[in-house]
Length: 638
Image (cartoon, rainbow, N blue to C red; front, top):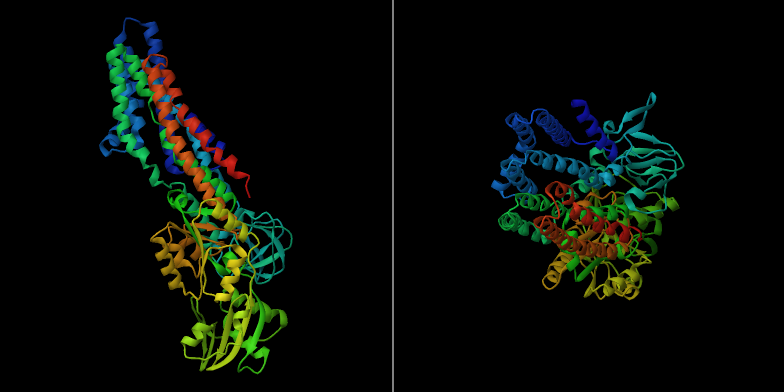
């Protein structure tokens, strides 16, 4: 018996390509064991009754053992669900009543067969429902479990959990990246499709960041470990996806409310059937076919399908706002730099105020920019490294969000930031037509001397205009641009994209106030890079973080994180939410219609109780098929 049980458990595991949890194994083993014991009792009772037909009491005792073994766990769950008013136990409540009715009326064989058949059906259901984990389990397999660690004694293969920050690992062509880190030697192309959904590989070289869960395609590279295993972006994404499986949608609570009336309704129909037809078998059949398996999949099945589709495109959905509020959005707010624009700035000009040379201006700015990951700082550092302009390190740098950088070393102080911030600190930067450029302008102050200004240029994403147009076509009442940049740059982006309103010269807290004000009259979606826009993303009805791969702030502050920078994913995810919500409501109609039809057919004797143990899953099957349309209709986009 034990060997048969273990074989069944392993069969279920093998069918999924993933291990069951210890709790799931124990529960499944108990269900299989009790079903087998009940079947042995049933067969023994039938044989004994055939051999000794006059000894009905002994046969009844054997049957009773089978009913107790299979029925007691069912009855215990039903009583617990009834006392706690837990609608998820509606099936156990109805089946327990059916089993008791069978036993009391002398239909002992049926009293055993109904729960046994249900156990078999649920075993098969488990194989299908667990399929919802396939994407996540497959994703887990993408992260390498071992790493080649470079040591003084040569190369050593270690488990990825043993890696520490600062370790150097070697990744050869074809190997998966086990950890987040920085390339310190070599260059290659990295397949990041599993995280970003981008089909084309990303070229990396010294200084670039690479991520766990991606694959090295050609060149050998050496990587300095920046995050330990439990802190990698990949690990956090998988954890969030696992949490997302339990997403509940408040708007579908209508199902929960109805289920409180559903059990009394089923009992009333069964009682009326027994009274009017005077056939207890029909009443038992009503109870069996009314088991609400399909009702439990009304929202979970389409949500799992939506998660599978979104994950494939590099869209990380974190909570139920995806359906609950995203379908009600009327206003979309965009950040500018890194969101509507590429965020890949280049220096387009400079102005010398007190600096003696261009090199002095650039080098002083580089002393603090080297400690920042802001697009402006990265652009300056790229220019310094490309032209070989030396700069000094060792400054203690403090970044003031939306304003600039302050660096100190001994008696030295360097400021690198926006004109308004520099002026607020009491300095007087000149302004020789700084607003004629299309991008931001940052000033450099060294020990009280205003050295000059660096002008940067950025380009609007090629898909931005089309995306804004699609949002308007989809019913958005207004689109808004919030930026800390200058008016000229903001107006230029407005002309290029067709955004309705723009607000400029905004600090992060001022962006937050604009979001609060807009929320008074509209349902607001905010889109930003998740760093300077964290406050706005958290305040909006729904926040979407762009290019969130590797950004813990983006993953934590937003409701939805886009692991790539494709603006097309915004109208896509809004369309996906509408489709998911629509299918959820279709599923409600399907579930209750199928249940009603099945109960009527059972009441008039068309469906007997034993057949009902199989057929009550028709609603669940139809709901799964209907929910799979999300995969078919949305999977091919993009």
